Amino acid sequence: MARSVLAIDIGGTKILAGVVAESGEVLSRAQVATGAGEGPGPVIARIVAAARTALQQAGQPVERVGVGCPGPLSVREGLVLSPPNLPGWNRIPLPSILERELGLPVAFDNDANLAALGEYRFGAGHGARCLLYVTVSTGIGGGVVLEGRLWRGPGEMGGEIGHVVVRPGGPRCSCGRAGCLEAIASGPALARATGLPSAREVVAAAREGDARALAVLREAGQALGQALAVGAGFLNPDRIVLGGSVALGAGDLLFGPLMATLEEALLPEARAGLQVLPAALGGDAGLLGAAALALAEG
Image (cartoon, rainbow, N blue to C red):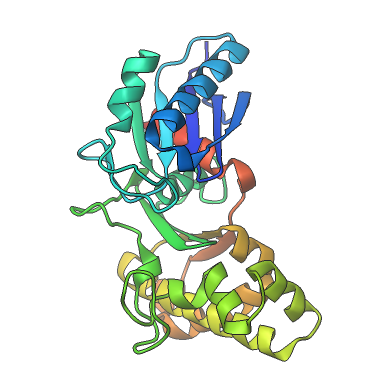
């Protein structure tokens, strides 16, 4: 029988659990509201309930559990530290709690790392020797997969490209510094720069020819290109995959200036063989990334 695992994707608004086959086929799904404001106890109870529902629906044994969770967290210590969209989660030992409740070994990581791993195993990064994945959404995060393995780094900050400073003295970032990529190209940053309610509104205005929206998206694409050039210059990846609702929603409005900046900034040797692609997994990125982690560690 083919291997299958239980995957759990924890978000600020919803929890998705599913049994996933080794091929990437999702065999069952269970979704519940997170109810993050109620604190860790009730949220963990809902995670366990969704997991049990998914297992019951699939009706077949699984080897392990993979869990994706917003950061910051420590894989090494097995702790969820203090995610902004999970209030009250301070040093919560989520993997050990779920192992006790589900009776299965649990692997977990932050959502950006798992999206990288999911795209590597099942999506646009499949077959890459060195994959740099970047997600542009409410925040900007990333992950690096080297020769099939996630690179977390000694401080577990590998791939955190959102806090590369691309505009010294630029807009203030949530991390407290000025000019980070996230402060220029994330969804909230685009909205602030244009005075529009959301990144979706910015993209819609740009497509209608609004000069301010077009300029802001062009600057965001250039900033992304600069940050990716730094990453590509050091890593020499053969694949860069760009995901997240903002990047995928904006399409060529971001990809155009990004690619022009990236090609200008990179040495010919670093450009050779490099593919830059949109992410392929869509709304299942978190779930399939969690499955990829469980399969990789099984």
